[in-house]
Image (cartoon, rainbow, N blue to C red; front, side, top):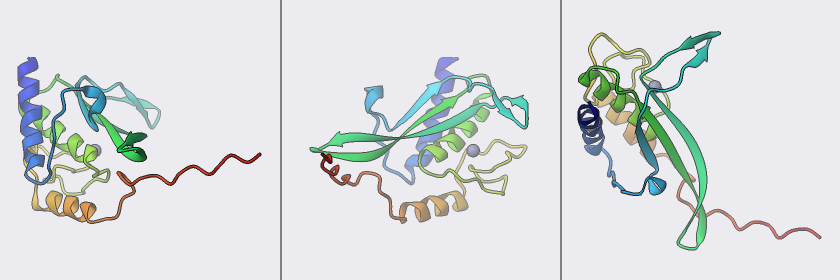
Length: 155
Ligand SMILES: [Zn+2]
């Protein structure tokens, strides 16, 4: 059960590795993206609790690296184990897309980042998914840049 989940998540990760350099770390505290085998808690939507199989939540942290403070994203991704393997892989592919910065959705159900999943699980990135990621990566970002030194305290 756990091996099946892990296999599905690793397959989704491999798809993103075609576009991104992903460095695995052994210490969860050092991870910028943390994937957990866990069903996301129900969320109220329109007054009714709604279940989902995956969720990604973003925090922005100030971390000290090389002697200066920098902003870094930390994303926790929850992927439910309670699905068929291909569905787990499709969920992981979609949620990892959020984790890698694609917070918007596509209106094409064939895309990994589709707002509404189609009848078939999407387990590969489309040309549109890749183009969106490349566009995003070309945008300026303050992540990873040294933060300005805090102003001295006023008397
Ligand atoms: Zn989504």
